[in-house]
Amino acid sequence: MLTTTTTPAEDPRRTTGFAEQFACSPRGARLARRLAVRRMGEWGYPPECDLSCAVALVVGELAANAVRHGRVPGHDFGLRVTLDAAARLVRVEVSDAAAGKRLPAAPPSTCPEGESGRGLLLVDVLSVRWGSAPRRPVGKTVWAELAVEAE
Image (cartoon, rainbow, N blue to C red; front, top):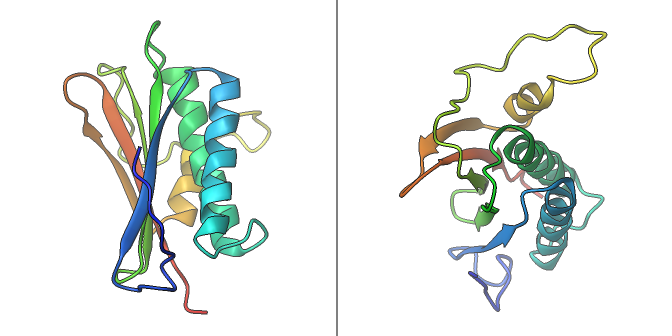
């Protein structure tokens, strides 16, 4: 697990972050979202601020997708969140073991009355950019970068 002892406010050139594995279950997705919000608070972004709320939504959506669409029995999913104070970006990465399932190039259009299908649309709206990459030795990583607004 990646950990730090200073906050970005103490050293604005520093990149800080963490990585953790979670059970590929709805409970694991909830824990991932809660840990991301807790760490954002430790980095100086309280749970009620816009950036922390955006990170919570992105982590929640990507983790839920990993659980629902990327689940491979016996494998966890991984979460990595990094804050690059110099670049003013938060990067969220969620990795799963399902290599054969590829993400669409753009968020799918959904029926307004539908109960699901808006997750990647939310990620697209909240992120500066997002995408996916193959994960070695198996699986994929879906990532999103969110802008840190000036205080």
